[in-house]
Length: 455
Image 1 (cartoon, rainbow, N blue to C red):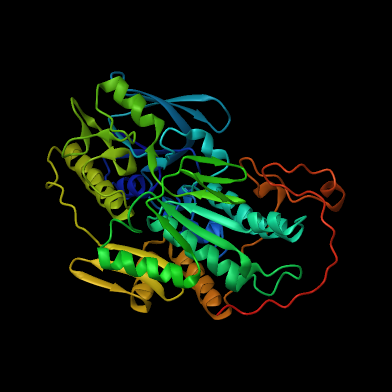
Image 2 (spheres, rainbow, N blue to C red):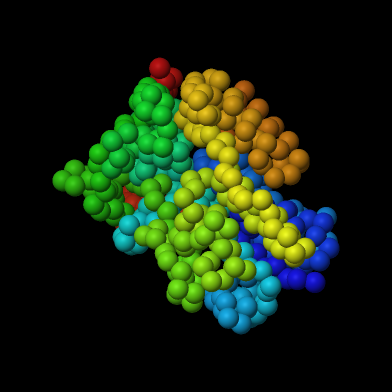
């Protein structure tokens, strides 16, 4: 029986495992540093309080529970020896484990890339994992709590300023959600200020938002964002980010929250693998593969998903298609045959901006507005793993649509992440330092105000 080791349980790795279902001559080991699959296209809804993490992140063991030829190892791979055909990893207990393989699939994914400015990550987190989403949720809703105890108007304005760097689908979706949180979700919940005073800025060095979309759709998306109240600044390259704001050349935006949605960087495992095999790596850390998604001179080592440089778009449908094909190719090779050549089918592109606001392109079709919004909901719902999770997500969306609320807004000390500080107690406010999350001393008169409803 041949052993297939799959590194990474994202869209690509999961589809490899699924494609090997029923292969009696194959046993599969799925290795991942987390115990769950993550539906990344809906991470921004976890970050903005619409969904809970469990609704888009089913456990790997639950997903493969009926697939008897699959075992799961919770570990982080740090070395691959292609000559010895071994994978070395550190398990959850800190112990090292070594797996031998007949076929290896590396689908370790990618993280956000800062174009050589990795120091920005502490003050401008990205959105690639559940941990990132929880961190961002803390920063988003925590910003309004910090604004409530601001010592002066200038401090409050800074704490209510949100900058999203990157005008791709993730950046556009986040900017739209941030403004909806301020204008709708929180509009009657604070007495000392009006949450709709929040200022959301979308920044990108590109000349238009959603540059991968048709130009007319990009224009409509920008117009929708601006009508919602988002300031869009294009052709603006980021030159610096710190705990108090962001620099765009000579321009400075004082901001309490900066989110990074620009650029990705392949897993470090890709470079380690390339050094061991002589394979090429592009600037984004992606490994160059052949038409079979295998490494040159190593036909039993496949690299797929966001870690592969194969001329395909870095989107979920492409990852799923390559994963399915590689799984079938391995099964065919075990039987002594080969799979049909891979052909990528473009499923189109969609991006949601806000309620009843979205853009979509499918083949020659181009549409926007309510129709695109409902199409986006349907397509993403169908890709959510597990029937129970689809029901939960549908229910959440229905309640949010009717009541405009967000049920996942709890801030706990455990939810704070890189660089953030927990919400201070009353006694701690006087001695808090105006650092990354400045608090200072606020004189609270609790004078109620009645915010005007947004236009």
